[in-house]
Length: 163
Image (cartoon, rainbow, N blue to C red; front, top):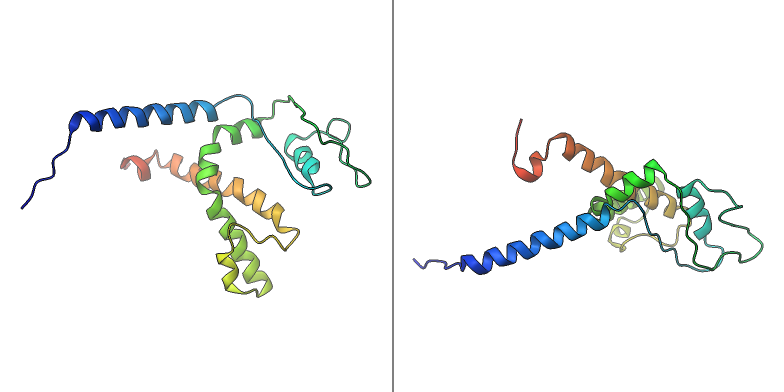
């Protein structure tokens, strides 16, 4: 029987580097501001998306069907409790949003008697114009819902703590 040799010192150094990296990620996602970049073709709903998540109107974020109207870097400052909450949980959303996308795709397939092979489309079905709304909503809410369940379990799934 062979024994596994572990260099404890190098293991501890790697562990410390990982801990520091996670602290940096947590600090970045705990900021009080959220930076959002929206890129896309003309009249695809970029300004409408920003209006929806910020609650601001056409006077602040212009969105008109007749012409291109933004196309510039803008800084919008408005404290919104929902956006702050989402910002604090960005890592959770990032980790689980693809699962949420597959849930939306599955519901679409079941509702439209679609081809089950559409589940293999990565990451979303692009040819159905209204699905982006469902992908956006579920891509944020499902991860937050799952995080809430795990949080209420006091981290039992992650840390092995049981009530």
